[in-house]
Length: 438
Image (cartoon, rainbow, N blue to C red; front, side):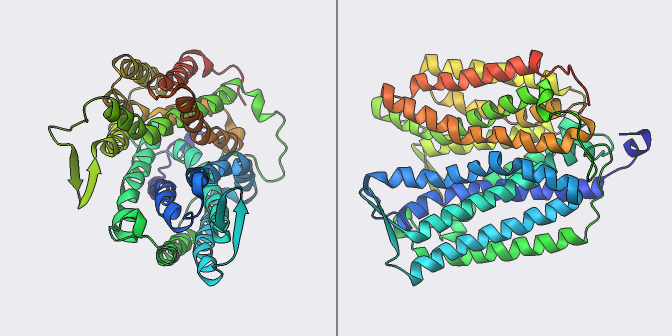
């Protein structure tokens, strides 16, 4: 970026991208929250395969990241940042329409079912999985734009990792609100056993209308391309994107980051429930359960809420760290998270894992900033391949669950998280050093 560009303040575009980061976080978590209702509404006759089919919702979402990330970066080259954003939003609208279609099809054709082993699955469920993939593809494309844009669009008084932390805070607010939206608004506080397929149609239609409005607004906004961050249309890139060692290792680092983040967020309550079975029940200041906003939380579920809340707090704090370099931030956070996880294993206590959320909060921004350092016109392509690593959020939690079944317990499975933290520490200390610039 030349000196003139450094003097430009992209405050308006920055605010727009921060809002879209909120949308991505909200829909990512909302998609996962639909596992429970869909498990009841679609999978009543899935028998012993009910949990397997339910987890396919999250898997199909994360599968979109490695499969569509490169398409997003090629779109940035061809259509620019704004053009890619708009296309990504319309893909999201398409995915929400497919969600709507899955419910409509199930109601209109109740006898259209697929027999898989002992499970009888409505065809509408597979339509929903297609929608999950499409919305996941949209989220991937949006992040291909959002991440490098937040790094590159200068705002007075901020550095790149700080702007990513602000975007991450917005993303965390979306992930925090989504469970209350699904449970309290979409299903009106009903228990999962009471949810009907017909109740899924209206919220998907409403979300589609909201996203159409957002897309039309973005079309009217000024979101200038930032020079030096992407190849021009028709320009040939002389080097393979994988020839940049610090980027390649950064993709591996983000694989472990997303994997350990989701592993704790998704599995900590299962670990806590296991500990409750073996020992005395957990309490929070003497209470065995808590009621928040009219929703009752058992303490194991509340642990996951606190973990994600810690992510939000950490990102808010991280957004004020304008003087601390990303490498230093990554060293401090990985060391802290590693120590907490090892203590959780030694003490056999899930509460130690809750605190790890504070330190996981700013790792994404640090790893991304270090990964795209000095890539110049390769930046947008790098952002696309970077999304490949996000598939760790589907793989590591699944591997941990399989290991827990094999060894009949969760305690020692947390060494998977320790290994991931140590790789990120290696990346901070050595792997992120730039040996080849664009």
